[in-house]
Image (cartoon, rainbow, N blue to C red; front, side, top):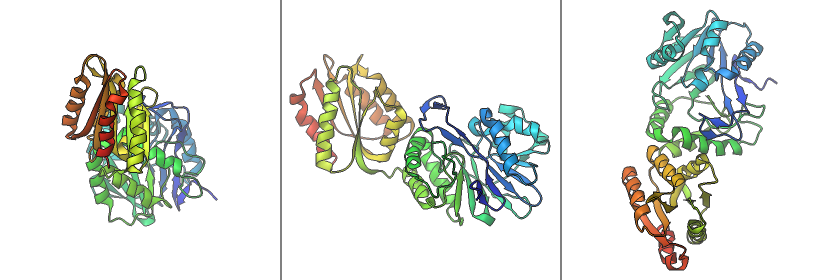
Length: 392
């Protein structure tokens, strides 16, 4: 059995990267990442759906050769122009002299800007337009800002396959089998939370638009540009993206704190115990100085309650907490119960003023707050209890 064969004439030809440490030179990816590319062969023409990062182009070409019946390549459909998917374009154009880049007007503008692709090697398509490969037709749906302005999806109706670009994707290199069948998918769902929080969260309303646009298609398989090909767990991954993009949270509380000398951490640990006791729901505690922003953001996106704590630092928030508040603001986070706590030595209220600033930016009221002077935890417990009670 060829596990790379998705349907007759449709093959997975992507590449796994287990060496990259940081995605976008920013987000840690301990499980690596896949760059998914797909070969669709008709009786008259062959199309490649999405490319790979430039460092992986050699393996992509090898996989095309191994899976192609004709060896020819006529079209490269570019659903997303970010360089982790488009970096191989110049080399593909060199290797395959008949190849034309297929994309919308924004895609082609970026092709010229990034890679200097000449006009005669490009083919512009419109929303809803169909490209006939002979026995297989590709239809294109514009889904802008999922998560760049040119993003689109490609529909192969004959086989019920949606090539979705970055939508429904996640971090994580694949483990031999690109399909979600006959393997443990739970690590990939965990990586979806991280991927969505880091890359897509700001664009939730556009994800919702895309879901509505393709909602009436009879989809049996989703082929994203990262992560597994979804078939057995298709409904689960669509439901997850729908919940995340509509800011529909799961029951639970995430507590994130920064600390210099352990005073603020004592508040966080007390809160964790009290919140778990009163809510009976999961509690995740993150020490922001020692954990990745990707993991913290994933839980902030996932759970309904967010409690953030900081020591006062130069009359402001501790730097890692300041960075978190900026990150949450940029992602336009919604539908959360927000509480905050801080410690100080000589500047009461300074950290709280910064929390108030960010809460106003996010249009998210602070339900409860606590301030502790130095390490007078017993004097602060009533305030901390009020935070836990506010989440019940």
